[in-house]
Image (tube, rainbow, N blue to C red; front, side, top):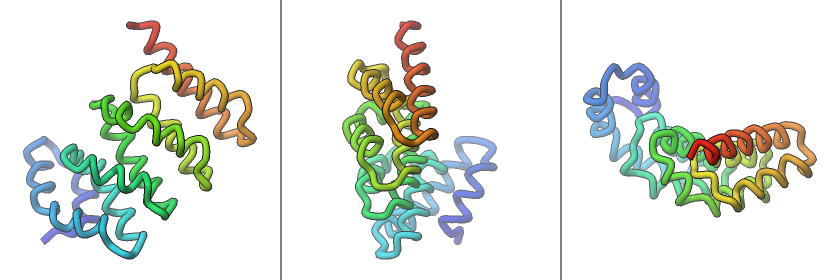
Length: 162
């Protein structure tokens, strides 16, 4: 029996989609239990595993992770959301309002920056462009200004390519 952490490591080395599907099937119950655990470390592993295993059927669990009380869990869920939304921009679009909220008001700087990075995989909606431009101009954090400016430019390029 493969543990969830081992499955995440194996997923990085999975040669094909079939091997990844087998891994997902093997750890699906463990993943569900992990994201419901009382210990934030277990939940964080579970949320991170969703992206690493490209578990697109578990995206509703990611939303729970984005709203978790633990910054580690929110960060892990954001990493998975960013990874999954590379191929499925609708996932970033569906969570746009929550990503804006996290980027603007989360108590953890790393979580705020990860939320901004997730926005780059969505569509270049006007509200997001305005929001990112504002963050790039007024954020007190140098890293946040840089991330917001970078994502803003990437979305503007995406908009002009349409």
